[in-house]
Amino acid sequence: MDALLRGGPGDGQTVPARGETLVWRACLYELTGDRHHQRDGRILRIYRHRPDCCEPRDRGSQDQCE
Image (cartoon, rainbow, N blue to C red; front, side, top):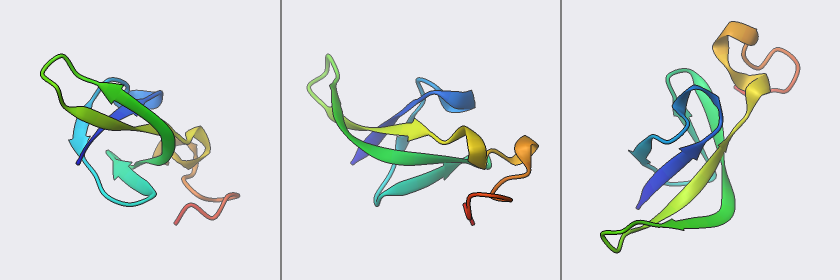
């Protein structure tokens, strides 16, 4: 199933995803319970950005994002 990224540098991107988390360009996104309905009939799962897990901010140094 495809996912819609919300927040962070990937905001608005549609990417293939499975699981509770995904990494997009060295930033961590977590699955939410929300869904987005596309005009073409597809339903996308929404993943929310974790700002504490983005590489320019010492990715994972305090939140065990690895």
